[in-house]
Image 1 (tube, rainbow, N blue to C red):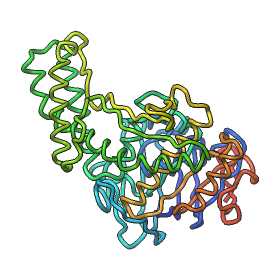
Image 2 (image 1 turned 90 degrees about the vertical axis):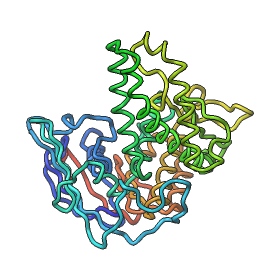
Image 3 (image 1 turned 120 degrees about the horizontal axis):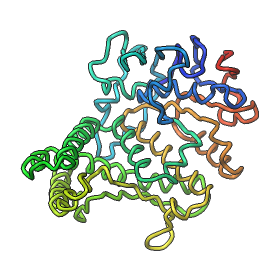
Length: 401
């Protein structure tokens, strides 16, 4: 997919503008604090309906205004990924919509008064926000991605949840169900409700939690080799390893009997863990086991256990691992949606040493990627599709196209 038109109204510091984007993409040039990252944030908002910088919707409205609105027109660029399934949903998932033969207009707005979010597709309001997710098939690369490696487990869970919600059929519903039931079970525990009242939430919690864990496990197992390949290609050194670290101990070999048997084995393990931890939960007033405590381990392939990159990796190693994760995300789009992903690059090369920068550039030039939008402080920093990208300038939120 490619973005052919973008309309901005009261988003961050960006001035109200209507922009026509070239098919190859664009390089947005400007000094710091002029709105470059805000521009990418607006585009990516149309993919996920949230800020990639974890800002609340009310923080995205320009100071003194009540509503922001973003409208994008997405068109097929005729691309197709390799189409190889990886044990997940084949083709378009329920949150990654297929091409319908013509342009698609995606509009997202948020009103401070009443805290109302409205999303429309071709002028029709989406019945559920999840119906509008994944329309652009975009991946964003940002210096802040290093937190995927340096940060706590919640950062990696969030990454998994975004990738799977956009590409895996049914994952978003399972995740939403789990979170709702978890909240209610925690409320019962905190209130000191009778055991029977707490136990009433167990079947739904176990079912939805097992679905979430099975999908996470499946994706990590399917993509761990690609993660290692990307890391080695960028770092030009030892490979790295990605592994799923569920909070619930899953029996070895559970995946060997098919998806249904895997979920059943995970559900049994989750149910047993809940029973074993119940007295501790009573004392603490909160559910202490489950996928809300999962992690993804990232380590260098060095000996049996390897070196954990979060605890012992250098700055360059952590940034390389983060890049590898985002490249795997782009691969997931190609495989699940049969599209070349739109690539958004937020001054990402500024954080890499020259050697890694050159290897990332070479890798991206050979990857199947679609339209590219890159931000940079000066022309010389535009190093991908150097001679193909139209240059735009930005100052004080005004884009000169």
